[in-house]
Amino acid sequence: MLRVMTANLLNGRGRPDALARLLNEYQPTVFGAQELSTNQVSVIEQHFGFGVAKPSADNDGNALMATSPIQVEVLALRHRSALRAEIVLDGTPIEIISIHLANPIDGWRGKFPERRSQLDTLEPILKRSGPRIVIGDMNSTPSWPAYRRLCRHLEDPVADLAELQGTKPAKTWGYRPGFKPRLRIDHVLTVGFRATGTWVREIEGSDHHAVIADLELI
Image 1 (cartoon, helix red, strand yellow):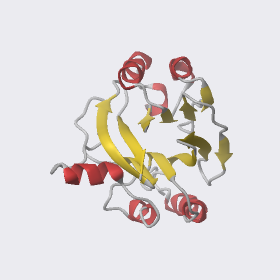
Image 2 (tube, helix red, strand yellow; image 1 turned 90 degrees about the horizontal axis):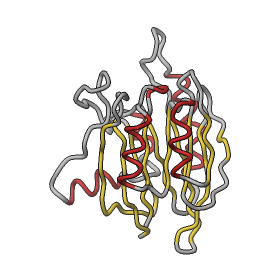
Image 3 (spheres, helix red, strand yellow; image 1 turned 60 degrees about the vertical axis):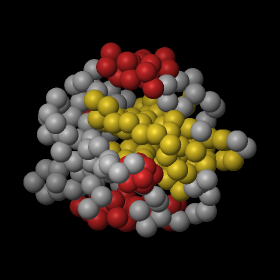
Image 4 (cartoon, one colour; image 1 turned 45 degrees about the vertical axis):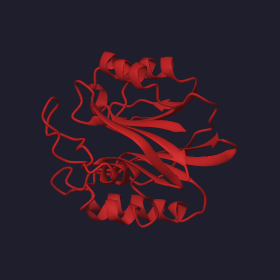
Protein backbone atom coordinates (compact mmCIF):
# COMPACT_ATOMS: atom_id res chain seq x y z
CA MET A 1 0.00 0.00 0.00
CA LEU A 2 1.12 3.54 -0.77
CA ARG A 3 -0.20 6.61 0.98
CA VAL A 4 0.15 9.59 -1.34
CA MET A 5 -0.45 13.25 -0.61
CA THR A 6 -0.56 16.29 -2.88
CA ALA A 7 -0.74 19.90 -1.76
CA ASN A 8 -0.60 23.32 -3.39
CA LEU A 9 1.10 25.58 -0.84
CA LEU A 10 0.12 28.94 -2.39
CA ASN A 11 3.60 30.19 -3.15
CA GLY A 12 4.79 30.08 0.45
CA ARG A 13 1.58 31.20 2.14
CA GLY A 14 0.63 27.71 3.29
CA ARG A 15 1.78 27.70 6.91
CA PRO A 16 4.75 25.40 7.55
CA ASP A 17 3.41 24.42 10.97
CA ALA A 18 0.07 23.44 9.43
CA LEU A 19 1.83 21.37 6.79
CA ALA A 20 3.97 19.72 9.47
CA ARG A 21 0.84 18.75 11.43
CA LEU A 22 -0.68 17.08 8.37
CA LEU A 23 2.51 15.22 7.56
CA ASN A 24 2.77 14.04 11.16
CA GLU A 25 -0.85 12.95 11.25
CA TYR A 26 -1.04 11.13 7.93
CA GLN A 27 2.57 10.02 7.38
CA PRO A 28 2.37 9.80 3.56
CA THR A 29 4.73 7.52 1.68
CA VAL A 30 4.88 9.87 -1.31
CA PHE A 31 4.34 13.62 -1.31
CA GLY A 32 3.96 16.06 -4.17
CA ALA A 33 3.92 19.84 -3.65
CA GLN A 34 3.04 22.70 -5.93
CA GLU A 35 3.85 26.38 -5.40
CA LEU A 36 6.55 25.40 -2.94
CA SER A 37 8.67 28.18 -1.41
CA THR A 38 11.84 28.14 0.65
CA ASN A 39 10.02 28.60 3.96
CA GLN A 40 8.29 25.22 3.53
CA VAL A 41 11.23 23.10 2.36
CA SER A 42 12.69 22.25 5.76
CA VAL A 43 9.34 20.89 6.95
CA ILE A 44 9.15 18.56 3.98
CA GLU A 45 12.75 17.43 4.24
CA GLN A 46 12.25 16.54 7.91
CA HIS A 47 9.61 13.99 6.89
CA PHE A 48 11.14 12.46 3.78
CA GLY A 49 14.61 11.12 3.20
CA PHE A 50 14.45 10.93 -0.57
CA GLY A 51 13.34 13.01 -3.52
CA VAL A 52 13.68 16.53 -4.82
CA ALA A 53 12.35 19.86 -3.54
CA LYS A 54 12.64 22.80 -5.94
CA PRO A 55 11.32 25.97 -4.26
CA SER A 56 10.57 29.10 -6.22
CA ALA A 57 9.01 32.53 -5.65
CA ASP A 58 7.04 32.57 -8.92
CA ASN A 59 4.39 29.85 -8.38
CA ASP A 60 6.60 27.27 -10.13
CA GLY A 61 8.13 25.66 -7.03
CA ASN A 62 7.50 21.95 -6.69
CA ALA A 63 8.60 18.82 -4.88
CA LEU A 64 8.34 15.06 -5.19
CA MET A 65 9.45 13.31 -2.03
CA ALA A 66 9.23 9.79 -0.60
CA THR A 67 10.12 7.75 2.46
CA SER A 68 12.01 5.19 0.34
CA PRO A 69 14.67 5.72 -2.35
CA ILE A 70 13.50 7.34 -5.56
CA GLN A 71 15.31 8.94 -8.45
CA VAL A 72 13.45 12.08 -9.47
CA GLU A 73 13.79 13.69 -12.87
CA VAL A 74 12.35 16.86 -14.32
CA LEU A 75 9.72 16.28 -16.97
CA ALA A 76 9.96 19.32 -19.21
CA LEU A 77 6.57 20.85 -19.97
CA ARG A 78 5.68 24.20 -21.44
CA HIS A 79 5.04 26.96 -18.88
CA ARG A 80 5.78 24.76 -15.83
CA SER A 81 7.62 21.45 -15.68
CA ALA A 82 6.58 18.34 -13.77
CA LEU A 83 8.55 15.89 -11.65
CA ARG A 84 8.69 12.18 -12.39
CA ALA A 85 10.06 9.24 -10.40
CA GLU A 86 9.85 5.49 -10.01
CA ILE A 87 9.16 3.70 -6.75
CA VAL A 88 9.01 -0.06 -6.16
CA LEU A 89 5.98 -1.52 -4.39
CA ASP A 90 5.91 -5.26 -3.66
CA GLY A 91 8.52 -5.78 -6.36
CA THR A 92 6.54 -3.79 -8.94
CA PRO A 93 7.96 -0.56 -10.37
CA ILE A 94 5.48 2.31 -10.14
CA GLU A 95 5.79 5.54 -12.13
CA ILE A 96 4.83 8.65 -10.17
CA ILE A 97 4.31 12.06 -11.77
CA SER A 98 3.61 15.29 -9.89
CA ILE A 99 2.13 18.01 -12.10
CA HIS A 100 0.78 21.54 -11.89
CA LEU A 101 -1.20 22.31 -15.03
CA ALA A 102 -1.40 25.86 -16.29
CA ASN A 103 -4.45 27.80 -15.14
CA PRO A 104 -6.53 28.50 -18.26
CA ILE A 105 -7.96 31.72 -16.80
CA ASP A 106 -4.70 33.09 -15.39
CA GLY A 107 -4.24 36.66 -16.58
CA TRP A 108 -6.19 38.54 -19.19
CA ARG A 109 -5.03 36.25 -22.01
CA GLY A 110 -5.35 32.99 -20.11
CA LYS A 111 -3.05 30.00 -20.43
CA PHE A 112 -4.98 27.76 -22.82
CA PRO A 113 -2.09 27.21 -25.28
CA GLU A 114 0.33 26.37 -22.46
CA ARG A 115 -2.18 23.96 -20.92
CA ARG A 116 -2.81 22.18 -24.21
CA SER A 117 0.94 21.88 -24.77
CA GLN A 118 1.42 20.36 -21.32
CA LEU A 119 -1.24 17.77 -22.06
CA ASP A 120 0.24 17.08 -25.50
CA THR A 121 3.55 16.21 -23.84
CA LEU A 122 1.99 14.15 -21.06
CA GLU A 123 -0.36 12.08 -23.20
CA PRO A 124 2.23 9.80 -24.87
CA ILE A 125 3.68 9.05 -21.43
CA LEU A 126 0.26 8.22 -20.00
CA LYS A 127 -0.38 5.79 -22.84
CA ARG A 128 2.49 3.56 -21.75
CA SER A 129 1.71 0.30 -20.00
CA GLY A 130 2.31 -0.30 -16.32
CA PRO A 131 0.98 1.06 -13.04
CA ARG A 132 1.14 4.81 -12.65
CA ILE A 133 0.16 7.55 -10.20
CA VAL A 134 -0.32 11.16 -11.29
CA ILE A 135 -0.86 13.71 -8.54
CA GLY A 136 -1.10 17.46 -8.34
CA ASP A 137 -2.98 20.67 -8.88
CA MET A 138 -4.53 20.09 -12.27
CA ASN A 139 -6.57 23.30 -12.34
CA SER A 140 -9.43 21.23 -13.72
CA THR A 141 -12.66 19.88 -12.28
CA PRO A 142 -14.03 16.56 -13.56
CA SER A 143 -16.35 18.47 -15.91
CA TRP A 144 -13.51 20.32 -17.67
CA PRO A 145 -11.71 19.13 -20.82
CA ALA A 146 -8.24 18.78 -19.27
CA TYR A 147 -9.48 16.34 -16.63
CA ARG A 148 -11.42 14.35 -19.21
CA ARG A 149 -8.36 14.19 -21.43
CA LEU A 150 -6.22 12.88 -18.57
CA CYS A 151 -8.87 10.32 -17.71
CA ARG A 152 -8.70 8.82 -21.18
CA HIS A 153 -5.63 7.09 -19.77
CA LEU A 154 -6.06 7.36 -16.00
CA GLU A 155 -8.70 6.52 -13.43
CA ASP A 156 -9.90 8.60 -10.49
CA PRO A 157 -9.81 6.26 -7.47
CA VAL A 158 -10.85 9.07 -5.12
CA ALA A 159 -14.12 9.47 -7.03
CA ASP A 160 -14.51 5.70 -7.38
CA LEU A 161 -14.25 5.15 -3.64
CA ALA A 162 -16.68 7.98 -2.91
CA GLU A 163 -19.19 6.40 -5.29
CA LEU A 164 -18.85 3.03 -3.54
CA GLN A 165 -19.47 4.77 -0.22
CA GLY A 166 -22.49 6.64 -1.57
CA THR A 167 -20.89 10.07 -1.23
CA LYS A 168 -19.19 12.66 -3.43
CA PRO A 169 -15.48 13.52 -3.45
CA ALA A 170 -14.64 16.59 -1.37
CA LYS A 171 -13.81 19.83 -3.13
CA THR A 172 -10.26 21.10 -2.79
CA TRP A 173 -10.03 24.80 -3.74
CA GLY A 174 -11.61 27.93 -2.35
CA TYR A 175 -11.46 31.48 -3.62
CA ARG A 176 -9.20 32.56 -0.75
CA PRO A 177 -7.43 30.85 2.16
CA GLY A 178 -9.98 29.91 4.79
CA PHE A 179 -12.91 30.05 2.36
CA LYS A 180 -15.11 27.02 1.84
CA PRO A 181 -13.77 24.92 -1.06
CA ARG A 182 -15.84 25.35 -4.22
CA LEU A 183 -14.03 23.27 -6.84
CA ARG A 184 -12.30 19.89 -6.98
CA ILE A 185 -9.16 20.67 -8.99
CA ASP A 186 -6.48 18.76 -7.03
CA HIS A 187 -6.37 15.09 -7.92
CA VAL A 188 -4.84 11.67 -7.42
CA LEU A 189 -5.22 9.78 -10.71
CA THR A 190 -3.91 6.28 -11.32
CA VAL A 191 -3.54 3.21 -13.48
CA GLY A 192 -3.54 -0.17 -11.74
CA PHE A 193 -4.64 1.01 -8.29
CA ARG A 194 -7.72 1.32 -6.15
CA ALA A 195 -8.19 3.63 -3.19
CA THR A 196 -8.93 2.15 0.22
CA GLY A 197 -9.12 5.50 2.02
CA THR A 198 -9.11 9.17 1.05
CA TRP A 199 -8.98 12.47 2.91
CA VAL A 200 -9.13 16.16 1.97
CA ARG A 201 -7.64 18.43 4.62
CA GLU A 202 -7.14 22.17 5.00
CA ILE A 203 -3.66 23.66 5.06
CA GLU A 204 -3.97 26.97 6.87
CA GLY A 205 -2.72 29.83 4.70
CA SER A 206 -3.34 28.06 1.39
CA ASP A 207 -6.39 28.32 -0.84
CA HIS A 208 -6.01 24.60 -1.65
CA HIS A 209 -6.73 21.63 0.58
CA ALA A 210 -4.38 18.66 0.59
CA VAL A 211 -5.57 15.40 -0.95
CA ILE A 212 -4.43 12.16 0.69
CA ALA A 213 -5.16 8.67 -0.63
CA ASP A 214 -4.28 5.13 0.39
CA LEU A 215 -3.66 3.16 -2.80
CA GLU A 216 -3.22 -0.57 -3.34
CA LEU A 217 -2.26 -2.40 -6.51
CA ILE A 218 -4.97 -4.33 -8.31
